[in-house]
Length: 221
Ligand code: TZP
Ligand code: MG
Image 1: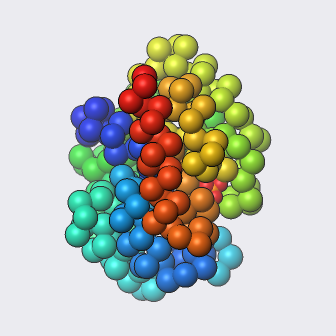
Image 2 (image 1 turned 45 degrees about the vertical axis):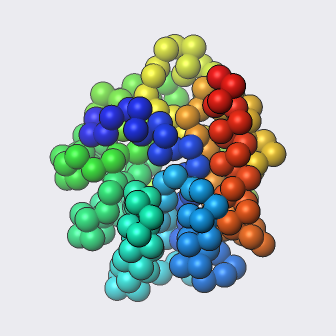
């Protein structure tokens, strides 16, 4: 673990994820608007048909990183550990098909490490190997990730919290300001979204609505 869990929990509240293929507008403008709206963490996830590679990918990463830096929003890189280390990102997010979390932890030192998990066993391994937070999903149906696993609703989240697993947790998949509340009530520390912000007519308003939805429940907790 590299980050204080309490600080990690607040960063997870509204975790915006995107790459160039998720945006209908210029990604820099989308990110700037999302930050204005109140996102708390950003992940650069450059994936899917038509995505950028090599120098072009790195160049977009650096532009988005600079935008995050101006507003003190930590900048996380999906999958690409080499890029994260090269540009000195604040952290990385990996899945079960990527390198093992303990190997990645050795490569990134004290940067933030997030791991996607789909079972108790994967969660326990991620924790043992040094994850700062885990991502679980898809919570609701999503069309953003073609190879997403089966929709799990709140079942796995509830199971994790009943087992008294305390690691910071963020949910992903089909989350909007309308359906975010049950997730927080069930014990998630925040929501991660792609299309609810990146495809919105106003990414700023979409981010603000998500922030309100999450905070409304947290204040009542
Ligand atoms: N992992 C599980 S679902 C998903 C990822 C990356 C996509 C989430 O996108 P959206 O648009 O917020 O449903
Ligand atoms: Mg991955």
